[in-house]
Length: 127
Image (cartoon, rainbow, N blue to C red; front, side):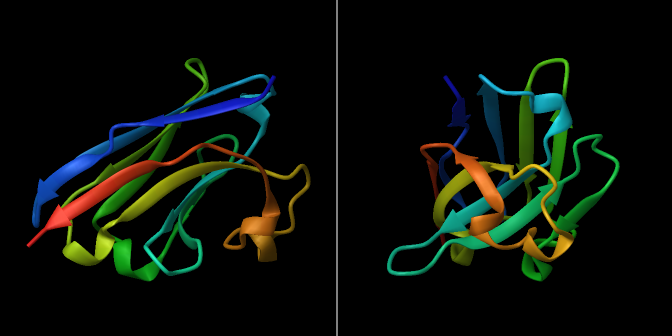
């Protein structure tokens, strides 16, 4: 049974930091690219960050570049999102997602490019 379990969300003041974790099981994590998306109330899922299966290539939403860092530990089947200098507009439910096999690069920022999703973790930034 495939599971993606996010943790690490919470409420922090603007300028603060959070580190999200996503523990994966039930599939070949070490050979699967991963991503983080977020969804604010009343909005669609928004791509945040992508990491290749080796961890050697990453990609970010422009507004989080320089503030967020995606990483992975294939020995622990876990992907992380370090979020620094948080802003109120970062408030959302954050989801980790596992990429489809042989996903085309053009689909990296699109939800349909991902086959497994976690349940989400709430991140709230107060001003």
